[in-house]
Image (cartoon, rainbow, N blue to C red; front, side, top):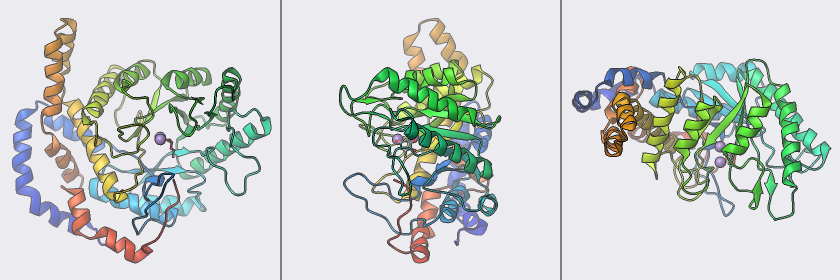
Length: 424
Ligand code: RM4
Ligand code: MN
Ligand code: MN
């Protein structure tokens, strides 16, 4: 791949004077510009291995060409993203879509690209060809003990792969639930799920975490066994200290106040990780911040406030990941846009005048509180995000450079026009 330090350096040199003028103006607008840049430089967002190919819907899939054909090529793609933005330093694998054959060589390859392995994800929402029992009626909740055991064993297998690669967390997302009233005894489904999760939890290495992700509906349409943050919290509280809730932005019913959910989970010490994306209707898997950027900022505002209140390290103490896989854009361009939107929302949240906000809240000065938040959101901080990239040898404009160097065409030449990556 022709993207190298020199190409990035030339691209940056071309854009430098304009960037510096913008940076100078931005620094005059925000009190803590330098501190924000440093926080941004440390912040990394993991890329899911299933987002590197075109996502499909149940109606169709339109592969874009040059999609990664193997885990190695997926790692190379994330390496490309990381080279461009220096903020995508980890990859999250889905098993069995990405089974590592040789841990050492996969780890070495990832290391060459500066990548770590983030959470590993289990899959009990699809049946695999070599599988004995079907998950048609659920996995960890199933009325049949043998099916529950198969699903538990799969999760333990996923942990083993993660250990081989140096991951430190398992994300469990269940499609379990029911499609019709009367199909399921909710209480029994809960108990079965809890028992199965306890068995998985018991297999976690001591320095591992378990994230339990919730989702309101889909693929089940009447009930979901881990449907919302309250249900996830109820499980993880019973499991123990290593278990916490994972928030996927696309997994809420319309108008849910996600920022409040995040604030309360943090307060309970039970927020474990994040899946970023955006949506208009449901689990749409759109680019982070493309539909509701103000909501993304409000979520980060709670994250920064809540993490600071608990003395947490922003970069390390929660699992940050993108979970999006859409149908119509180049997946790599889409991921670059998502990372940029996340960094920008984080920067805006870091720029909020916390003392002034607290004072306005204590005085019930509603107008002032709103002014403070909106001022932070409406101040253009893109130059700070770009400066963080510049200082870490990333590109000032990743999407522009990705296009200018013809990366996609080169990938198509290398891999072919009709490759289909494993994933959704
Ligand atoms: C689910 C959920 C999970 C992801 C799968 C592919 O809706 O978001 O996190 O692993 O999709
Ligand atoms: Mn997710
Ligand atoms: Mn999802």
